[in-house]
Length: 80
Image (cartoon, rainbow, N blue to C red):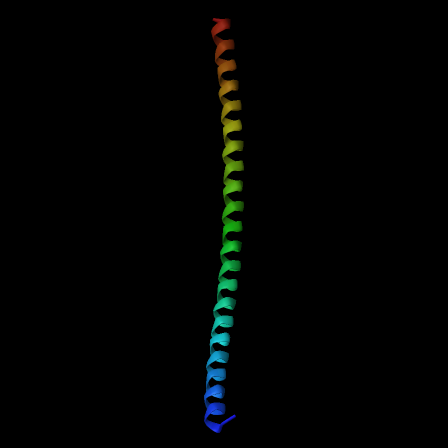
């Protein structure tokens, strides 16, 4: 193999190694971004479930209060 060909092949190999290194860096950044977004989504999902539970509990409390008030009003009307 000629010296010129060896130089060209070495240069191509170095450039190829640079491309591989850049690809691995981008892949690593994407993996970290994906993990961060997944954690963020999980926190958001948990927050939404908690809000839904709080709304459900509030709805039950309001219904209970309304029923108690209606029963109390009905008893007063009967007594009159």
